[in-house]
Amino acid sequence: MNIAQMRPYVGLDDYKALRSCFEINWVTEGPQAKEFIEEICRLTEVKYGVLAPNGTLALFLALKALGIQEGDEVLVPDFTFIASATSVQLTGATPLFVDVDYSTLQLDVNKCKERLTSRTKAIMPVHMYGAACDMTQLMQFAEEHNLLVIEDAAQALGISWKDKACGSFGNAGCFSFFADKTITTIEGGFIGTNDHTTYERLLYLRNQGRINSGTFVHPELGYNFRMTDIQCALGLNQLRKKDFIFRRKLENFAFYERVLVENSHLRLMKPQAGSGFMPFRAALVLNEEAAPLSEFLATKGIQARTFFYPLHRQPCFQYLQSLNPPSLFPNSAKLFNNGLCLPIYPDLTEEEITYICDAIQEYYKNK
Image 1 (cartoon, rainbow, N blue to C red):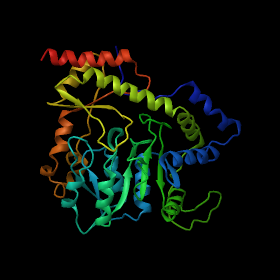
Image 2: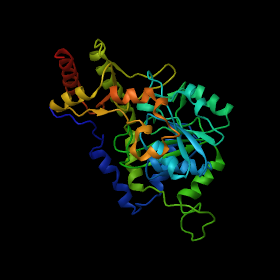
Image 3: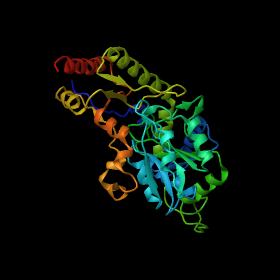
Image 4: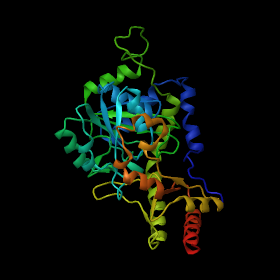
């Protein structure tokens, strides 16, 4: 077999959904975008929302709208995709990395306090691999230390913490609709908030410093961070299929779990109590380095993927090493060494999952 690490769940029905944009000759941000925003606001339980070209710029816009600027510091988990930190850097602020909990893969709030300085203005929880951070603990910490909260919910659309939607807890919540996300517009992002002042700032920032297009008076400085109706038409059709997509991903995860539960060499990452779950990948934590297993799976035509490279070790962030000494991040370093992601997309078949699991069992049998 040849099993890809990810396949976007797009089909002819999605292609046909784009037709209305061409029938009315409206392809820039318009009626489809308005409806898409309303649907995402409903799903994420926020009052207001705006679109962005991608998840990275969604985070940047949220930080910018909340006043994060040069000289400020933002707490960011060391174990996350690099965009969580580069969005902070785009504002001129400095990301301060925090280790994660080894069992949950989520930001360790208990380790945040030791990272605080007089310049720390915000914290960015990242809901990892389709499970939620402990937002009860995190919001208490943020309130105690007067910190803004920007949720990176790129992998957490439709996920909740204790029956409250991820992305609705903080001052702003940011989502991605990249091709590997549960709902895709190929590229795209969304910022949700329950605060009208923040919402108004977002409107100015993303639309050239004006609330509405069609005018050449720009009361504030802003940028062009819009989406197209073509993307939003795709997003709306994806939302019509979300129940099926969600069900299939959970079924695939359950199949992995049934087959691999007896394998003592690894554990399949599951959410902590209180968290909803929509697996972004089937995330395995091994008792040893994952590279040899990944290489073995590749010989079988199976694309696996490592966990995220720790931010404190990223070459582009070495200039921050004095602020982020490696000794502070044992868990993120170990997770990178021992972690492996397996495919879980909706049209992955039981036959393919069986093939993947058989290959894993073969690897350990022959060791």
